[in-house]
Length: 244
Ligand code: 6GU
Image 1 (spheres, helix red, strand yellow):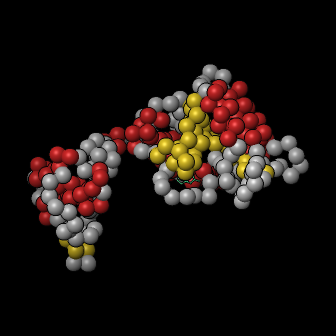
Image 2: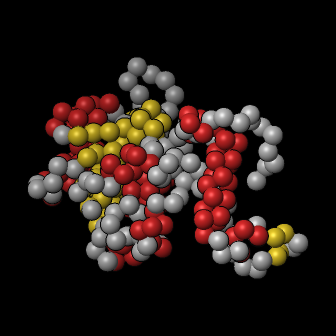
């Protein structure tokens, strides 16, 4: 998959060199290119923002540098019809199903806004010429799209075949398969500060272990995220369980 990122803070994306995604990049599974929006400004101060039309607080990102940057990426990749994602708290909420859909794309472009946002005509221009999506990573406010883009790139990148070594580890985790939260995990030692690993996990009875994990998943989901619980499991009363 090819990913282009346009940002005024390219340094944020240095983190993509680390760990799993860095390995995916060096193995050629992921081709991430980060572009500094200021390189597409024409004035000597490399200005990318201006005061809002109609007045008000804050600054708005000017359309011209965005046009130059995005046109450059589109002409550079004439064979792909990328999906352009603008991270925005006003966008559609990013979920695991959306990550799975986006992992099927050949080419994604992330346009990271700062200040009060990007001039609306940039969205309108590229929506008319291709595919554009505004995407939020949750109901809270960040200072810009960079951290949101990194979160989405990690969630999408690990779903690309070959990026995660053991594909089974993609299945058993929270929000996959049945939509329940993941069960608690333990490792050695069997006793730590007088806290025991649940004995069933040490007994070697695989059916009993599977049943324990399923019940732990259901109990945790009911307590922490009741709205995620499938109807057929929504039976017992709520709120009588100890905290994690
Ligand atoms: Cl995508 N951007 C910003 N600035 N804030 C957010 C967000 C995105 N998602 C949640 N909050």
